[in-house]
Image (cartoon, rainbow, N blue to C red; front, side):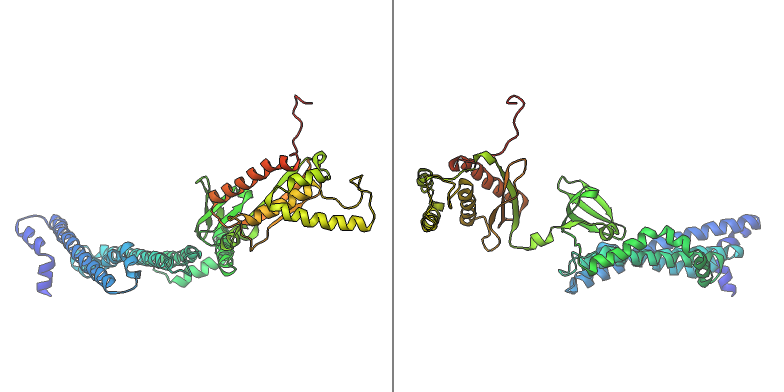
Length: 415
């Protein structure tokens, strides 16, 4: 015991022997001892970090999984190495503050709080590593992993804060849990969005409603782009103009949105657009008109076969064909509609294994809509737009061949 005291009060004894008062000797002894302790902590921290980091890096090189690489990337070994100086401090405190016993309890209290915080940082870096690792798994990379990691982190911080309060007050954790039970309504109100987000994340994941990388449209929030992040409280969408829209996670459950994943996973991207045909330009086709249209290779056979069928039908009913409205007749709109279908079916950029159709919709005050319904093989946005433009460029230029006109509102000059 005498040797221990001498070690603890090494500077004190020297200062007393140098005729310095007891009070100042104790203070200076503490300062000298603190200097030695701080230098020791720096050295221990340096070597512990080197050794533990080297062990982790060696482990990452010798294992097939890349999980340990993520641990190193998120500084988990560095946070673990910070525990080694803590053990040294825990051991040295009684010697360090030998002459200041009332302070020892407070120092131990501060050290215990520091240990709790270090453990939180270790768990936090570990969970981040888990998140990054799971995103490398093909079946999980598009799942809202971050939401579940955030829930675990909230729980970890909750337990840590309870422990810190328990350390400061000296009371059991159950005491705080009991008190929080009485404040449950307030807690639910404070964490309302977090709770709703957590439930929504589970529903989104379980029902596979949305994945990272999905193209979604949610007009009420101005969102139209790719999902880049799904976390506990929000979903981040990068719009096509590169702006970011943030939507509360629970809104994806309570409100409606359009997910284009079905199109992305299918064999084609839908083309659905109409030409508005001027009603007064639609007419029956006579023999001269048909003879001219037979020069179009795509519908030559169709005209021949259809005309034979119509002639047979009209002759059986003894129709007077000097008036075209009698009996059955080919119209320029009907021929143009069939021409469109044949043109689409012959195009290399259209997936003919999916629906290819040109249909006439109900006439309106803006003409007769002739709708094209088909699927482009190429689903990339830019290529898709070019394909659709090429189709309608051709069809618009073909209208005159079929003696049809596009509907246009009269200009003010004409009126």
